Image (cartoon, one colour):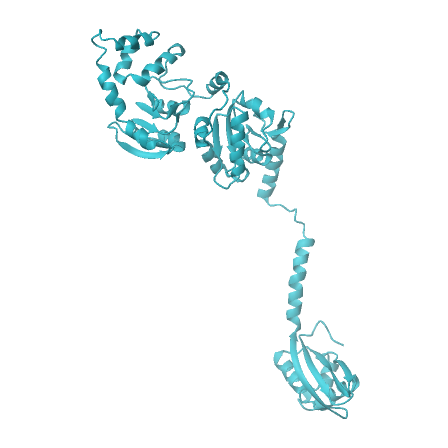
Length: 451
């Protein structure tokens, strides 16, 4: 019998005989014709008795007066001795009374087959029998945080919109696309996000947008763009932030989220970017009131009573004239300008020749920037320091080291840009048009290309 514990190799051979032979004839020929051929150390009968050779298996059939079949012999010898035994089989030329021919077909390494079986079985054991719920320390921590974040999620309105716990209490909120986006923001401590749940913006979102400063934060794909366009039509949003191209908010890291929110752009520029015109008038009084909740107070600001009168002369009168207009004639600015046209007063014609050249120098820059959504940072000699995208203008101004004297850009003059300009001590801002300005610093001259 074959001993599966000691077998190393199996010899496979093919046999053909010119006549009809059976299994006992083949086995007898193997023992008889190899006896004494290899010496006493390799005698097949002795080797089989000691278990060095396994049972000789013969499968043979007869057809048309001829016989053919296969022989297999297990061996526990090493490669060399097994090869000698295999070669000895081929010396057999007769089986019983018939001429026969034996040819070794192959020698199989049983251990290699066992190794292959072990590998395949180990794979199945690893998949089926090991407990995959054993977690590392980081995985345990993350699972606990995930459960806490899920518990923190609330649902707003009759639409049950997924939202962070601070949405109702915050003056400013983020509007994202789905529940996974809210979860990812909660992961990094941002708890004032609410999900629209698709391209069909529910009424709950419109109600929230009417009461808070809203930043639409969408994925960097076509779906995110469509949601922004719908929000512009049905809700009153103030800023727009986008994930990097081809990336979702739910997949962003904390650093990417912070960068995207810092690069948010005002809704006025988004309207220009998407060429959206004839938008219905929003409740601007509410917008102005709620924007003032999160704006930092500029360094130099006029009172509320002076704001409307201060903006008009600042656009047309050169800077030298502004101090003379402040003390006495603030409420009567329109009358003072009417007097400026009259030839009678002597001092008034002085600023008129200077106004045209002062406005004329930046006209070329405005024309060159038209339609580019770019901004030029100017020094005190009206030279270009550098040119940046409008979306990066706020960051560039915050990082400026005092060399920037003014800005000319193809975009909307917003409250945020105006506040930063005042903080940095800029002399002028020249934009494409004026946005909704709640607080107007006296120290910054604001001009537009329409003025």
